[in-house]
Amino acid sequence: MSDEIRSFSGVDRLLHEPSRTIIVAILYAVESADFLYLQREAGLTKGNLSAHLSKLEKAKYVEIEKTYKGKIPLTLCHLTDKGRKAFEDYREQIKSFIDNV
Amino acid sequence: MANINQIIRKTQGQQYADGLIELMLGIFMLIAATALEFLSEPLFSGGIALIGIVLSAIFFERLQMKISVPRTGYVRYQDQSKKGRRANGITAVLTLIVVLSIFLWQLTANPNNALAWLGLTVSIVIGLALLILGIRLHMGRLIVHGVISLLLGLWIVLFVREASSGAMSIYFFGMGISLAIAGAIVLSRFIKENPLQKEGSDE
Image (cartoon, each protein chain N blue to C red):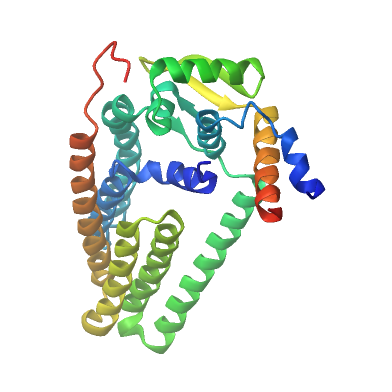
């Protein structure tokens, strides 16, 4: 088995979970998104989304901010620089693995 | 494993899902068409155009917060990188130079048709922008708007041939109607397909 394939065992396990991959992919494409947007786009329940966001926030991949736009309360999430880099590295790993299989 | 590129592309396309951008652009173009009709009174014409720009921008954000955000959530799209902004700026300047050059060339060579040719050039620029965006985001209706823009421009230069600003106002009126109707239909469908969530529901 080639080194590139073997190195896949070191993939970021935090991102290598489908729901979290989807959440981070959505946040990668935008500057920030609120809870409702993520819930709908990722197809998750509120509880599920909260749990995944907590894990990502604990790893400092995501920052969560409670704010207002006018009078409307919003819970906004955005990727940190660390999270953005982690996602880019993860994409590279996946691509490299698939190319070498 | 989810197709990551597809997720990213779909997210970027979401800003067009409610039809509000098309609706507002359509209304702005109708206002621009009206302003062009009064070009002989520049202050009045300029005033209409300015009011159109300001009102479109204000109403767009307010309608988004009132209609879209409670249904599908709030998202802020990325500001482009410096490189992206510079590239867009250079493209805009080059496009302006090309459009003005064609207009000035026609003004000297064929003054009776100059504004019709300007209409064709503007229609090509807007049409190509919509086509490229539609292809990039896989959105059929943006491609249709792009084709409509090109056809309107061709029609103006082949059949209208006016020396007045009528040629340009015909283009903006036609595109305005097309965009506003498409935007209204998409918005209506968006509201039906995305009912407001009940308070406290888990889904």
